[in-house]
Amino acid sequence: CFKVLNIGPVSQIRSIGGYTVFKMSPYKMNNYFKCSHVCLYSCHAVQESLLSSASGFSNYRGILNWCVVMLVLSNARLFLENIIKYGILVDPIQVVSLFLKDPYSWPAACLIIVSNVFILAALYTERRLAVGTISETTGLILHIFNLSCILVIPAATALTVTSMTSVGGVISLGIYTVLFLKLYSYKDANRWCREIRQAKAKRLTRSYSCPNVARSNGSAVQTHVSYPGNLTHRDMYYFVFAPTLCYQLNFPRSSRIRKRFLMRRLLEMLFLMQLLVGLIQQWMVPTIQNSMKPFQVRLIEHTHTHVPNHLIWLIFFYWFFHSSLNFMAELLQFGDREFYRDWWNSETVTYFWANWNIPVHKWCLRHFYKPMLRKGTNKFLAQSAVFLVSAFFHEYLVSIPLRMFRLWAFMGMMAQVPLALFVSRFLNGNYGNAAVWISLIIGQPVAVLMYVHDYYVLHYGSSA
Image (cartoon, rainbow, N blue to C red; front, top):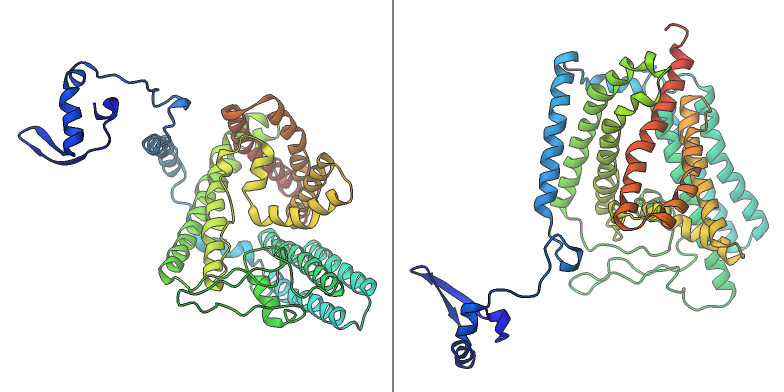
């Protein structure tokens, strides 16, 4: 009634004998008694149902909890049937064999250690460019050669060294891919600094540097670094380990390391890693092994593996983008923690790819997409080029460690271009969000199964 009568808010004091006692001013009380007959007969107001979009209601936590409970209950039966049929298959010790085929030969670890050569080569090239002992053209050639070696040498090693396992190859090539993107950004950012210095600018613009982050007592976390003072081993290796792909001279820094936050992220990493291993060994491997023979004949009928595949992908997303990257950022006091945005609300395919992996998205915008636009390329061709580069790296990270080239990952990424056009043109709102989820739940397992099928035929087809 107070809302209907528009006499202002009141504060509830307590309940006495079933009656609620309110506190209000004499003026409001006078208006209340004058209009008490209205309160007795008016119990309706203009308002929308909570499930209507016009109501403005957004607290659906109870429905979300219900979905989680139903998901757990619906999959509990599958887990019980799996355990009754196969027993306990989880064996953490068995995971070691995925990394070390020969316990005396660690090619993946050696390959990762050798990456320091390329890191130092980029640093010393930039030092020579800063003092002018080599020309810009020579420096560009050296950088191109160094970046090419970063992609070619680990790929050749994974293809020729038989003691390197597929999992070790994926990890080492993944690290080298990240290093390639980082050193490419390092090259570009330092070149921009030289261009500014040559233009006799007294200070770096905000696009290439960040202001100091102050502590609570007013002191600065770090001193401001100007080019070429950033060309040090400390600065280079901080950037190599920082959870970002885009280089700048002064990163935003947090004031301190929160030990409780750090321990929570570490425990999440350990627990989720064990959970991933358990799900793969207990759920994925038996399902794929049992479906191999009919899989050669009826591929589409065996897409039921999309449920465990999608669940593993979601757990991996949280493990990597939230737990692991936040752990590394907290350890290094790296201030920018935006590693992902609300990709789960994506209503278009392009929104998903732009928000589920923010470090890669920022790199593509800064070093690939915007430079193409500045050269006069239209947006559609620039976006298609970004998907093309992404498709190359997806195939690079899958085909080379498996030592087979089927282009399923490449074609899956390039298929995102027409899918993005279709969803943005014909599907809006919830329909677009549903289309994005369907592409994630169904598309990824199909691509994985194609590689599993080809790998099975290539290695075990003759024996079967």
